[in-house]
Image (cartoon, rainbow, N blue to C red; front, top):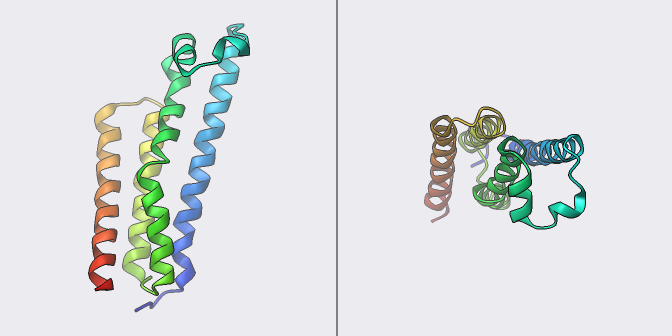
Length: 143
């Protein structure tokens, strides 16, 4: 089945992992800089409710996005491993994986910057559609 290097499926996986870490770094930077510039002691940020209460939405958006990166992308990671182990990796799956990453990247950029809901939702919907396509294709090719 594979007419591409089986390992190429892991490049978009690594890109997703890097994206997750970049969002985490953005979260850390925004929270720390906001707390420090507003004189908020760390002890006051001891619960999620207090964090939401004391920090502005701009400092909270990366936290919400980071949570999103541990939802559907987890299925993407497992699917990539399955495709590799099943020798199903081909160009269609690799392009689909890169498309999934690209739309998740766009989703994160929108979410962590100007946060227009319909733009974010479009990126989310397109990434989800690609993941559905990849999953259903994997199921079809596996039976």
